[in-house]
Amino acid sequence: MNSIRLSIHAFLLMISFFCALGKAQAQNAGNSGPIAISLHVVGKGTIHESNHAIPGYFVMATITNQQDTAIKFFIMSCSWASQNWITSNDSIYFREPGCDINVLADIHLRPHQSVHFYGALTSSGKKPFSKKVKLGFRYITNAADEWFTSAERPKVEKPTIYWSNEVEVKDNLFEYEVD
Image 1 (cartoon, rainbow, N blue to C red):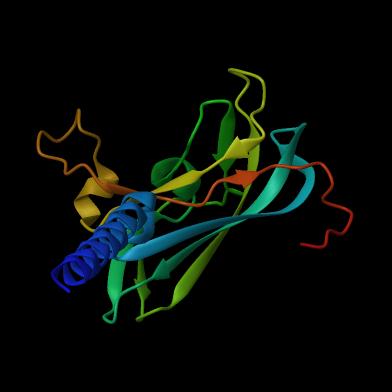
Image 2 (image 1 turned 180 degrees about the horizontal axis):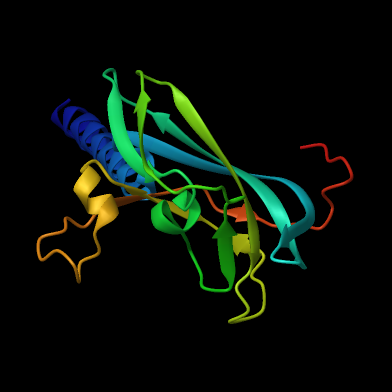
């Protein structure tokens, strides 16, 4: 009877260990934090900029407030793709459509509300275009940190970066696919 009880305790201890390990791995995968980032490739096309055409992939990057309270963060109204977003490798550049005036903008998200950013992935010209990419969002909660670089202000806070899922950029975007 004692050996059966000891076996049951060992089994339950082992299950508890693996459950705790699974939770720790989920947190390391970027599933925790005030926001969640997702990335979707929605089309392939040409981006026209300064009298030349650049081939690329149109994407939607989504930020979702995962909290039960409202959040606020800052972006630049025109240069948000280069100021607030980074790519997981230097062969891909994330670009925004551009606009006439670049000003500080604050985004307020209610609990579980999302904001969508529409941009394009293009080749940076540094390396061959990678077919797999993640986007990282610089979560800036202090307006002054958006305006100044670390060279201009000695105590600029390093923003937390939240990463999206990894997507594979495919050339079959004008077809259909069944999961």
